[in-house]
Amino acid sequence: MHFPKTIYQFADILKNNGFKCYIVGGAVRDTIMKRRVEDFDIATDAKPNDIMKLFKKVIPTGIKHGTVTVLFKNIKLEVTTFRSESDYSDGRHPEKVTFVPTIYEDLERRDFTINAIAYDLHKRIIIDPHNGRPDIKKKLIKAIGDPLKRFSEDGLRLLRACRFSSQLNFNVEEKTKQAIRASLPALINISKERIREEIIRVLNSDKPSTGFLCMHETGLLNYILPELEEGSGIVQRSLHCYDVFYHSLFSCDAAPYNNLAVRLSALLHDIGKPGTLTYDKDGEPRFHGHETLSADMAQTILKRLKFPNSITTRVVHLIKHHMFNYTDDWSDAALRRFIARVGQENIADLIRLRRADQIGTCNRYFISDNLIKLMDRIETIKQKDQALTIKDLNINGNDIMKAIGIKEGYKIGIILDFLLESVLEDPETNNRRTLINMAKNYYTERLKES
Image (tube, rainbow, N blue to C red; front, side, top):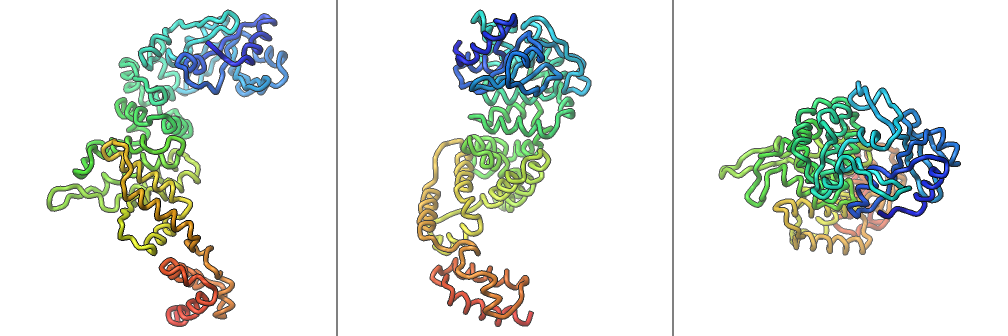
């Protein structure tokens, strides 16, 4: 196994002072799998005070539980003393942490076999007492020992099982899966912030649907995102190959993996469909107005899970506008109104969402001709540098007040909205003299007596 030279140098310092040193957890697992490793966790028999004496830059990140962060040369290492844990009275954190003498005892406290592998940096050998390597080969997420006990210790492990399933494209071992179903009440002890972070990690995986299907099959989803669960079994029009639930998952998969707002939007864009379901005279399902309800529900969900306001606002906006239907007969004015309504800064993400929505229809990767034409026409509009917002007008509120002789008030906003609508219809009107004349006429004819 190959790790950065700096880590071996760190281990040599411990060895020269009589201490053992192992890489543990995800770094070992991912190295075995030939995945990229970014974080390195170290286990040692050295106590935190020993570490602080040996190294200059040490941050006491979790010193109560035997963990410190060492900044060593060009790398950051989380270093934890061998320990055992007990008395999880809150179903999340151990009340009792005991330092233990060997790596074997330390590995027993961990969650899954694939995360309980250590690498001895002195002897250059793998320590795998729980058969994590065979489970990696079988692509299995399997709890160490009694899974019910593991989940009773820390309810977050239920979610971590599905998250690892998504990140690694592994299956959850059946006994472990059954234990998740039996341990669902343990989620009550988990903060919304921790749940949110696990969801984000699933969304950042190559195939989020794997993680959400794991949650669906184990009952987790009904606790965390019941609104998404409600789409299961809701049949859509004949154009669709899947019900609302599977369509949402496959749309999420199709959204760009490095764009959290679009992935969230794709996951939640149709959650309003169950609440808007009606049938036409031919028995075909209809979901009139589902985008508005979906946006409202998404806002509630994201606030519940304590997502940042910036993400929530973007997701809600994208969902609200995702049901556009571009055709060749859109005029340039209609296109400008579309850009103005959506916001030029949101156009690229909205098209990404629409493309993911299309792919999720039958889980086939393609991009419609109409969407390609729309992108080409939007690019042409952008190159013309035409006014698309009030800020782009060659006139402002102060100009209007001076020209008409009125004070600041709500009427100024009404006039500016009218002028923008006029310029969107005919960009040639965006010159100062024309705009002032239009403002005067509009005020005299529509607003003066009101």
